[in-house]
Picture 1 (cartoon, rainbow, N blue to C red):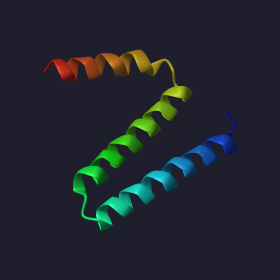
Picture 2: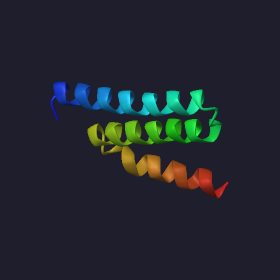
Picture 3: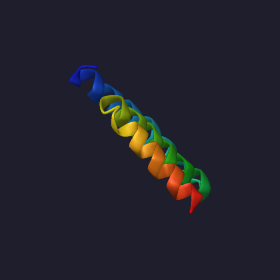
Picture 4: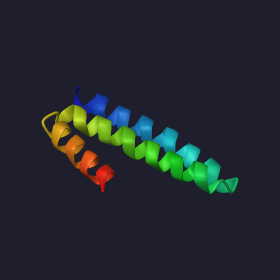
Length: 69
């Protein structure tokens, strides 16, 4: 992925998610807004993992540990 493709993808994610979050907040739908924030974080994390695949197993282990607690 080129830097331009990365920039385009980040803009797409941000534009879509922020629009959804803004709409939910304006409509007073707190839970939907929070879900959209979580979805944006998940999408950005997946994009980051695509650039650093070595960190994926470490991250999965820490998530498993946190869920077990």
